[in-house]
Length: 338
Image (cartoon, rainbow, N blue to C red; front, side):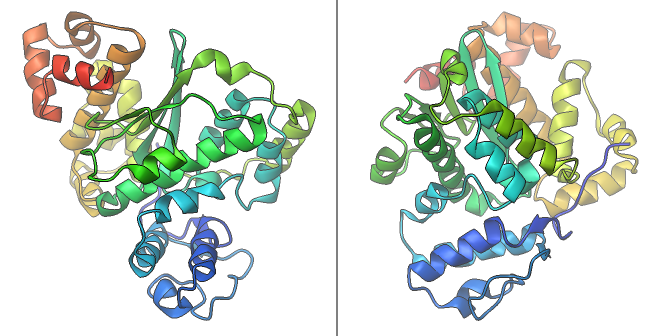
């Protein structure tokens, strides 16, 4: 049976990402009480007690408060500047000693509950290209843009700090192009694509293995060993995404997913409603992401993608893809290509 957590369960260490939010807001002269309201964080601006856990709902409330009180277009990006290597001593030490970008991204993807508890990072490498992309862990569409800005900036900053140079990332966003993109260009760079149905960073895969100047594989391994097996169960949204991704070629259903999670279909539907979503929407998202990966990384055509996803023919796939994304495959491929 697949383990999972729900949005109101306390799973996020308060001295990690939540304290990072509160501390940054105070540095920008925000009053602690409005920032901490409804979050379980100290309303006097003090650090939380060691071992305190917050729920994702509380953490997202804290981020929403911070964005509202600061009311600045650079807040998401600035929060990302110092988000990594994080506050966990063992994992922070491992990231600092990572021998390469590939090793650092592997740590980030293996330990999301400590390093990236609000958006789940996933890395795909194939055909000479690395794709790091994020999925929503807790159902926060209103905060998605800020979360993506924060997490992308965090990876860019970490790689530049430890690698000693700025890498030629390409960025894809699952949103319309904003009126002003100056902050994106300052913090991320100029290679930006919008309306891509996926929030992702793309890079030449060869750069993953280039040694970092201060890397130490032995020290990194020691840090990971000290972290031990403390990873927490993923959120339901993340666990369902992983399940659907593994089963996407087998036409998964609500009934088969419910059985895998050890609940009734009605219970799974109720749980997903708490994230503001439903089973078909989650399945369509996974199918869209798989199609995008095949288009972008393997240069697959409609017929190949249709066959991979189990459609009877390319025409049926094109109709379904337009229903999922609002675009035909050809238009989306053109958008990805700039």
